[in-house]
Image (tube, rainbow, N blue to C red; front, side, top):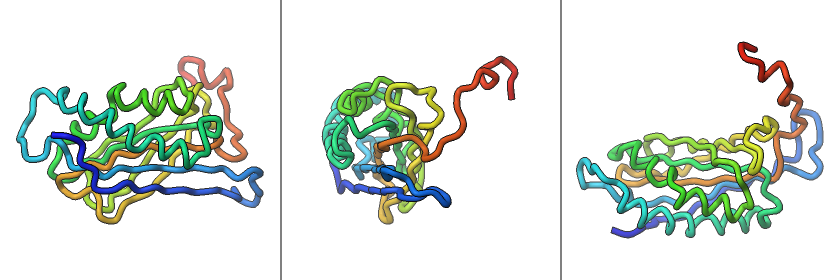
Amino acid sequence: MSLEIRKIVSFIEDVHREGARQISPPMHAAAVSAVIRNPWAGLGYVEDLYPLIEEVAPKLANAIVPNLIQIMGGPDNIAAYGKSATVGLSGEVEHASALIHTLRFGNVLRDQAAGTSFLSFTNKRGPAGANITIPMVHKTDRAERSHFLTIETHIADAPMADEIVVSIAAASSGRPFARIGNRHQDVEIGAV
């Protein structure tokens, strides 16, 4: 079975204000989601997911990563990134996880975004219209708290019971006016 994409959906936001303050330049963020047929749908319990992971994950990454890079205006405009997968109600959370927790998927975004950090993630099961929550981290410094971000969207008709929505996201900066950091007392053992 090969990759079957029903549709690709993009979500873009440009944040111009945070609270009472103007953001200059605006923070640009985007998410690109592929709605695909769950490659394990109807097969019952499958012990070895790897053959389909190796077949589907790279094709999936190549179908959506270039879109995100283009929307963001190139890798130099990406400061943070992340990923998410939501399997429909007839699937297993492991099916969603299988497609995004493989280097055959994650490395495509990491390489094209010129990043080195792991991709933060969510994976879950949900009905059509479920919230798609994509956490992000700084692309080269996963401990940079100012870049702990989340973008949230949804697709009204996805995932259907036999589908998976796989999403990636990026932002051009950290949180506007971030005021928390990696202070020494935060990293001491036992600090609250």
